[in-house]
Image (cartoon, rainbow, N blue to C red; front, side, top):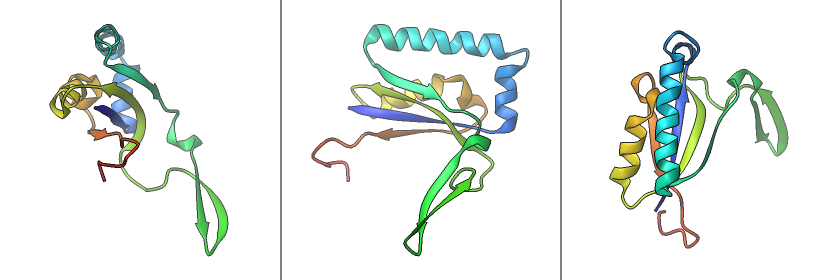
Length: 120
């Protein structure tokens, strides 16, 4: 089964990665990424830019409207994602729990929908 691990950030959590703990946290990420790549579980992923660079596009009364900022006002923002393929949802959760960001902000594990939409 394929899963997306959604990583959330906030201003405080990003400071951990930029501060004196940053090198150690990034080394942990490198270790996890190496393991996932070697096991064949890693499918892809990226970090996202700061939400101040976000544009939200929506239709309002049938007219497209573009606004600055993320869709919702929240303390946390979507900061990046991993795509993994695992045997069980528990394995995907285990990967998420090992991700250093889990110490500071929530992570979400969601199955990807199969072509037949069985997950709906």
